[in-house]
Length: 361
Ligand code: TRP
Image (cartoon, rainbow, N blue to C red; front, side, top):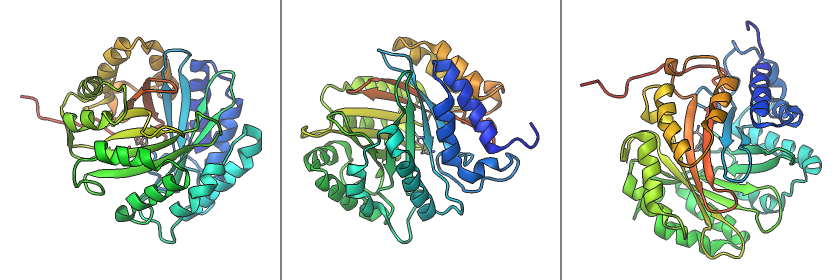
């Protein structure tokens, strides 16, 4: 263990996760190496070279397991591509190089990204990231790529106009105004309701999505339920129950709940909705998080033994010895694949100690 590199640690986890969901680890591990760049060779014992916001311990990678009804769970990675000398701007440039490098092999189409990316460049970027990527691995298919741009890159106040212009260029403006009307609390845009990510699928075709993410700070379960009604067919009671059951509360004063709105061509309003619950802020330790997730997975008919095996693939510690391994849980509603996603931290650098949220009576 001593002297193990960041790459070896993360690649070991990824390799084992691939086996859990029945995937060939070769392409995922090769992509992981590209994400980490030369920093993959740093020893785990050295501090992170860049304080990535992807995970609480600044690992530039977060794993997730996306359950759906029709096929085995997909394995996903959220990642920040690190430049040789990381800064927000340098990592952005490294990300574009990474995408360019893999475009042909993985059939990426960057037309929509190219059409908007200048809006998300800034000389002195605000916040801790400019662009993140996700990679989705499904058995028998090529990996799918998605990018997450930071709408607040020029400051919180500029985010609404940047998103508006990006959607205008993509011909998707009307869905945006529906979302602003329905999902934002009156007067709270840029205050308690923040535009957190502007995400794009890097493929073409009718299914190619733009996803807008709104973080609801200091929100109640009713605020989130109301926001979800932006999307036709979403049952706000289901969203409310998911949030309440996963957190044990109806008021989210810790890390914000985040909603995402899927926008596709030809629809005047968002067509899909997901809610992301930062469950780690609402539990004392990961055993409690697991105990909350378990009945949720059961009630949606998802096989929790896959999660059990995924946890074992990532860590050998006891769940009650830390908090944050189970970082988020999300509910995806609408096309293309509704389901539940569980986010797993690598804890490559650090296990957060358990901390009682409230003094027992
Ligand atoms: N670590 C960040 C956070 O918790 C970003 C992040 C990682 C995130 N995975 C996520 C945000 C899933 C929402 C949903 O906010």
